[in-house]
Image 1 (cartoon, rainbow, N blue to C red):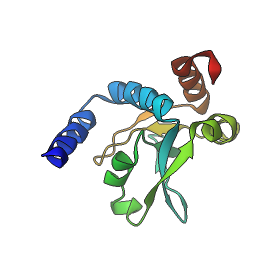
Image 2 (image 1 turned 60 degrees about the vertical axis):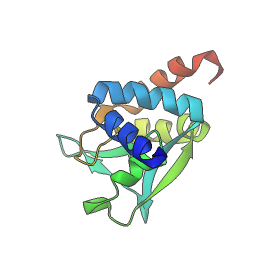
Image 3 (image 1 turned 90 degrees about the vertical axis):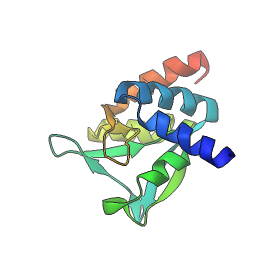
Image 4 (image 1 turned 180 degrees about the vertical axis):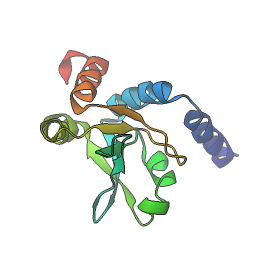
Length: 130
């Protein structure tokens, strides 16, 4: 019964509009202190509408694992500590001009944000401590 409820909860979150999944991502990232990417022989990347690389991130490993198929087949969820994300990963992406794709679904829809927007949103969500 618990796995059925967990599956239903996952599916309900995946059905949320991209902007609501983004809010869920922010809250979950701050609560858990980590986000998740897909790692194979390097991080999984997606393309935005203009053909630029995008780093996809998820709020929990089970959501990332659901997207580890097709082009990302063989990739595994890997945690990124929030501190590492804010201090190193996002500043580097900002410098490179690479956007972030928040909370892709198995169908491929994610919420695109710049690295700077994500830094600001995570710091606002977590309050002045982060």
